[in-house]
Image 1 (spheres, rainbow, N blue to C red):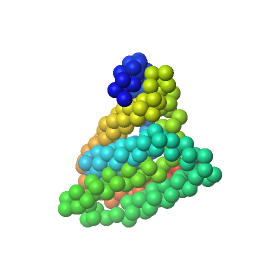
Image 2: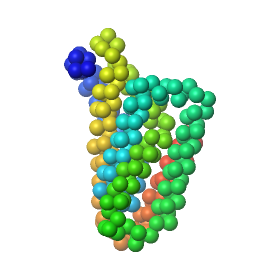
Image 3: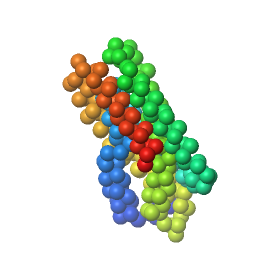
Image 4: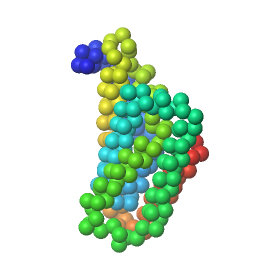
Length: 208
């Protein structure tokens, strides 16, 4: 595998990194989710959500490497089923955030909240079939079968993309979390904002 990675064109890798950074910086489902978690639970929750999203993207990358994603796409209505399950889960998160009370968000629940943000971030990303579609469409463009096994190149590029995504999503989570700290007295309003963001994500997943 090392021989394949060393054979990859450095300019191709640089181009991939640049495109990946731009794509990650563009506000999308991952950015909205980490922002919502940061607003709801503080900057640590925002970073934890970024960790979860990264874990979810690694699942999609692994599936793409072994070809499972391509098989799912070939199944009739397979993507629709996954998409609706993901939308239902986001709608559930929206309802919970809307009805959450400030008293429910105490320091005693900090560890539990971080674990929850990680698991929710991972599950939300895994249940978004567009992530898998994007990975299948984007990563192969930067591979070259003549230098070695394509799956090794996909794995390497996927790890790079997930790493940059973590730092960028984490930054959004930190910024939104710090804004939450400045508005600590208005947690009920921030919960409503988080609910709207989660609900918007659910609608976007269904309608687009």
